[in-house]
Length: 396
Image 1 (cartoon, rainbow, N blue to C red):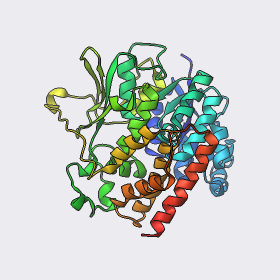
Image 2 (image 1 turned 60 degrees about the vertical axis):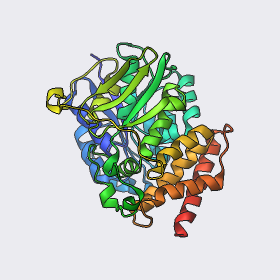
Image 3 (image 1 turned 135 degrees about the vertical axis):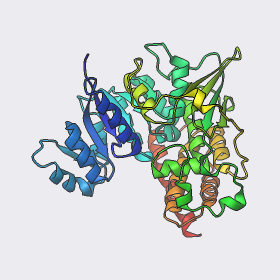
Image 4 (image 1 turned 90 degrees about the horizontal axis):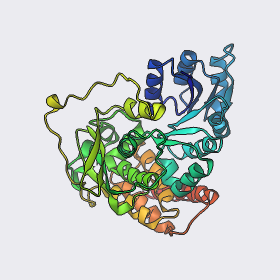
């Protein structure tokens, strides 16, 4: 069996660590040719010493000297800055690129990988939220394979394409009546605005089901994470927005479902562990072993599902549907404003309820239309949205 070479973008994050754990279990199937990180030098060095990649990259330019010093004598070259990460994403030896950089910074290296003909295991939401139509055009144009790593979209992918060796999430989901994205509800399920006004970053970071990075954990608490996933599903599976439904499922056992026209409702289930969708993305259409515990239905006993929370209490989900209906640059603007809002909430500069208020304020000021935009225009609008979001924070 030929060994597949992996480029891991975002190697020091939670998805990156889980990916390395899957690879660690299958040294006969995979090798790491590229490790790219944002700013965690110590962790990147530990990974490089264990996996001995062809090259490493660090996004923060000023940290490159520290990485090079830590790898002195290893023969492993160090690339730096946004350009260095994009160069690493196109490394000739890499066959599959795991795109796990958090935020807008992941878009350009992932596009570079697509244009270089790499297979993409996509764990970066912003690629589709910022530039969904343009991003999927690139996938089609370069005829490369894209498999989503987000547990919900990976679940839908498995349902739609199970048993199809050449499957990719690029084709319209024919005969699909509805996609049902499950959501844990986060740590504040059932809370109302009066209680949510008192939420602190520490409270919001205590997710009941999943171990994730700080930004995505806050997005889960606000329900913005599920809103972003609705946008992703729209572009990945070519299903109309009104056919994408969110269902609260606190146990996080059913990762998502597909309802077909004949009334069948098919689900993908498993314990909440990102190593499962990562293994699916790396090995598809084969299945490989992981150390994820088996799901014991008899011990579980029952599963519970609830409608999504009221928009008055958790407006971020409604904002995501709003920008999806608007189209054009609206999702990009929402994403940029949300990144700034979450950063300022974590820093203690704004309250929990101000996250949605900030996003709504930026959308109102920019009034995005549904007209098509170029990739260059999206980056300009992204920066403008961040500037306006910063102004909003400064006025508080």
